[in-house]
Amino acid sequence: MSDTDKAYVLEQAKRNGVKFIRLWFTDILGILKGFAITIEELEKAMDEGMGFDGSSIEGYARIDESDMICLPDPTTFVMLPWRPKEEAAVARMFCDVKQPGGAPYTSDPRYVLKQQLERVAKLGYTYYVGPELEYFYFKNSEGTEVLDKGGYFDLTPRDEAVDLRRETVLMLEEMGIHVEYSHHEVAPSQHEIDLHYADALTMADWTMTHRLTVKEVAIRNGCYATFMPKPIFGENGSGMHTHMSLFKGDTNAFFDAGDPHHLSDMARAFIAGLIRHGREITLVTNQWVNSYKRLVPGYEAPVYLSWALRNRSDLIRVPVYQPGKERATRVEYRAPDPACNPYLAFAVMLAAGMEGVEKGYECPPPVEENVYKMGEERRLKLGIEMLPGSLDEAIECTAKSDLVRETLGDEVFEKLLENKRHEWDEYRTQVTGWELDKYLPLL
Image 1 (spheres, rainbow, N blue to C red):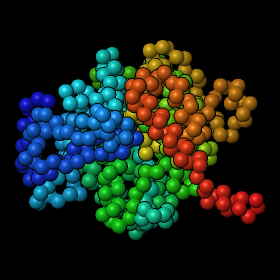
Image 2 (image 1 turned 90 degrees about the horizontal axis):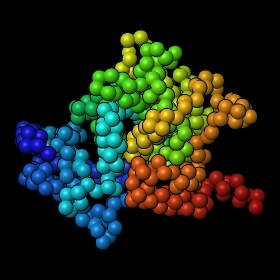
Image 3 (image 1 turned 30 degrees about the vertical axis):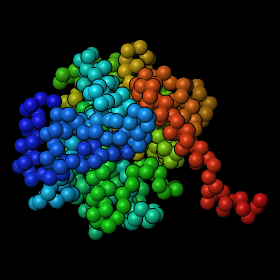
Image 4 (image 1 turned 45 degrees about the horizontal axis):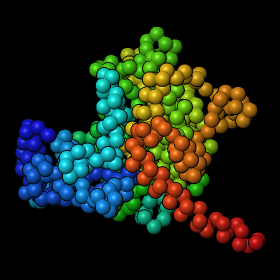
């Protein structure tokens, strides 16, 4: 941390009357963690970090090596707009988790992503992402009573969710987070706020902030917001379609003016890598039992490993090129849901794509017919596989993946598998309401 960065943070804190600074980080599941320090401790925190007990954080240290250090990243200092502003204001900073001696803690998801970004930076590239986060508003956290009956892009007068979105966007922009779109989604009470693309580390921090801000605004207005992938049976689930590109300086490495689809060889190999390793990385991009209630045919969620330029049913979509918009050439990966850990999800998506680039994977041709309506024989002929259909299947795919192990590191890899196997065991041993309704009268 430079003296200039530290001085800037201290000056901003003083100017804004900050009393408390929340130090944020995530566990391996992408759950936001943190604690508050007072302004009197801020300079020391930036110099030395602040200690905490890592043994109680999912995926972090064992009980016999529990001491961890949170070192604030000065570039992430922002005021929290939902907290008091006139007196005892509150700011937040994302932290890198360190070992007591100062070495990086390899189970920190932020560190995992940084390692992948450094890998492509050595090749001269910057990895940009732009996620579309969908979510639901409900009356409260006890059920799924919706606030509206709107549909995709509906303008619903007197709809309280319009004001919720407006307040959320204003708060995000107050924190320096650039919002591109906000609108109603397909399902009742389902909404979307899209962020303008940024480098992947910044975007992972923004994604965590986005999720908390949506929830804070909902609570302030007497309702509840959830990023649960599939909260309502029979309705579309919530996805986090993620747009990706690689730049070398100001040049978009995915663009080629001479290609019929305006895609460079690098972009095609990147797509091929995502398709080949799509099944392996799904546990990271879709990590919950409920995630696989969304990944079913018929609800606009991708199921098949294919790509297209227009068809939104495929795993990967390449938005159609617009003349003069070379910088906008990108790959949209449609599997992730907004309840993932964005640091790990962005890391494995980048690793899968770069595996295709580095090993020269051949990209299959785009599939422009509706894959859902395609017969099984036709799909097999085209070599189109399916994403895992359950958390259990995803676990088994990932457990065999050298790519995911190398990307996450041994400790995160093993801890994630352990946690997800426990979740699956909990789920599969439950007796659900559906089973009682169906079987109790008959058996």
